[in-house]
Amino acid sequence: MEVFEQVVAEAGFAACARKLDLSPSAVTRLVSDLENELGVRLIQRSTRRLALTPAGEAYLERVQRILADVSDAEEMVRSHAIDMSGTIRVSSLPGIATHLVAPAVADFRREHPQVTIELRTDSQASRNIALSDITLLTDKIAVSPETVVRRVSEGRSILCASPDYLMRNGTPREPQDLARHALVRLSLPDLASDELTLTDETNPLRQQALSLSAALTCNDHEAVLRSTVDGAGISSQALQVVAPLLGSGQLRRVLAPWISERFTLVAAFASRRHLPLRTRAFLDHLIHHAERSMALMGHAST
Picture 1 (cartoon, rainbow, N blue to C red):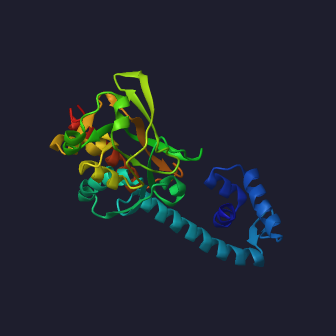
Picture 2: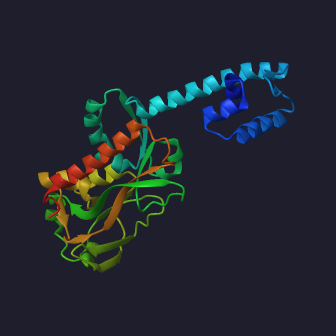
């Protein structure tokens, strides 16, 4: 369509070829292909002049409107790509939403007040990656091969309990001691609630695999955390989540230097193409916020 329009505008195939940086034969072939596709001649060729057929005149009028609409649509998309306004749709695992995304939103919106965040939590957030601008998961969750994944931060999970629980039940000294304690476990799809593998973070080759029953299982991360703070038992928690509670004394780490998991927090996208500036900026902000939070932890895990 563009070549046909330019042939008419430049009043010739050769002039159109120069304008579009194409060979004259390519221009001729493209117009011929268009005519063959439509089943009608659009241009009358002669050695002296170029003239539109009646069908060509009618087609040109429509083509000019179509190309103008396409140009407007492209400009609109480009403006969305560079304009720091609009909505960012974020899907996240519940714990990540509460302890990473929500705390990061205020600072981001102070810098970019025209951007709004639409945050939805889902324990199976990987199901709807295509429906969100950013989906926050851990590397333990499988995604389709075409999904683009970007690292946000590294993390590890530790075992912790409230001072009240430890005063009433004693403090475990070895991983095997957990069999005599009440465990509070997060129960999610594809996560075995009766299996726990501990790793010595000072010696990753040293591991303990334990089969343990739980006093409480729950599919809500915040309920597991709250019950741990209130003395229901020992639970595994991401260090990024419990660092403030460790610092305030509401929780204590048990069985150091054993950890229950290493994981990578990742942001998943359906495609790397046409990622708006506001989305890239928010992701960069999340990464910076996560790094700053890790730096502020200091020795909270000890």
